[in-house]
Image (cartoon, rainbow, N blue to C red; front, side):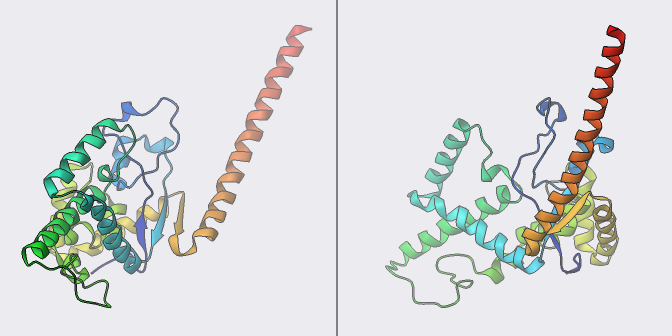
Length: 255
């Protein structure tokens, strides 16, 4: 598996509209899970990109655990059909962003939800009142898809494998660039081509305003705050000087 050394990209929540005109007039900050292809819908000369990278193994475990955690919330329903119908009703009445609207969860959660219900139905069919003790929480196949099965599934291979590099390169299955999907499939088939995609991702990281690390979250946040804070103070001072100059001109004209 080729990857960005020991780093993986991760975004915070947010939904990117498919049409730039749907932005609010004074929007100056977008926080999103989208890949770099979203830049095709933004003015490059006015846009700065910031991201946080994460250790690839931690990212895989976190993705597995979170997709199951969210999917398991639907098990309060008697069956999968009921769960889907309720989810649709809630989303139609909610103005905010749902986890099921966010990449990659909009793909991974429904997949895990269907699997959880199938395994629960299988236990009922076998008339199992309890599950035998198992100290390995990543291999409890009677309840949930084991990690080894999860990570080797075609869905995971398309979304999770080399996910960071594909995100920075703008080539995920959520890409806004139509040819991006053909490129990703080609790279997945001929993995030696991945080195070229990796180089593209590295160059894009070099051109970002700031790149932090999840493992050094506090330090990364502090460094980013100091960097951006200095820029904001500089801009405020420049704006202040400009206003003072304009006020002086008005005063002189008044005399």
